[in-house]
Image (cartoon, rainbow, N blue to C red):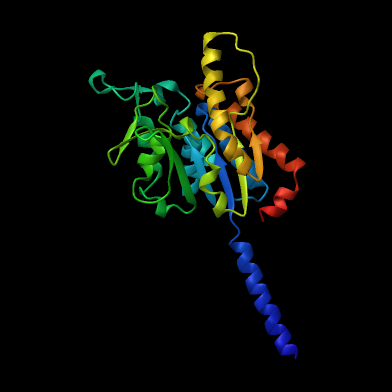
Length: 283
């Protein structure tokens, strides 16, 4: 009898352990240009609290940070790369295309392409240690799509960050793709069914700021559109963290990456302290 009980306990322990190990924690990261540096801080706070998401989705800057995290880079390594590669300088990021080849965008993806080539030793979604899903906008069909398989990883990440009219559109398999945030800035739909717990980080929350100049009108109009296309994704998240660096900085304030990082770190740390149940759900 004791032997039977012992065997039963061992079986229970094995099953319980397997369930614990296979628990899926999803992380979806919004687009937001330089404001997306807050994602690095948010991930840092998650990891300090023992939460290590293993299913990642993102649009635009969220896709860039997301793929680096899915590859295994730590938040501190990302910050160091930004510093070493001078990715906080607009002159590094914004490379004007030759005039005869500038029909699909003013700036090229040289900096992003070079960075991904150096940091990713492969070009396959399937070779990433963590599951990763990039949201892109198919300009030909006027729809948003999710890329998650195959050997065009870098192409889709670059496409996801191709701000229309700023960076050149990316042609993949004969189709024209631009920034995923154009039609879905928080693509939680891509991974909701694949996660036990889904954490969303939105760096473009509504702020209700008054526009005082032309640039304000442009930024707020774009943010309003992105907020509207994020509503479904926001509702799908079990935990939604908002970074309010947007109250002080804009999408092109790359030189403020450290301050923006701190906003994301603080927002996540504060959220976890107010929602301790999140720690139990994710472990």
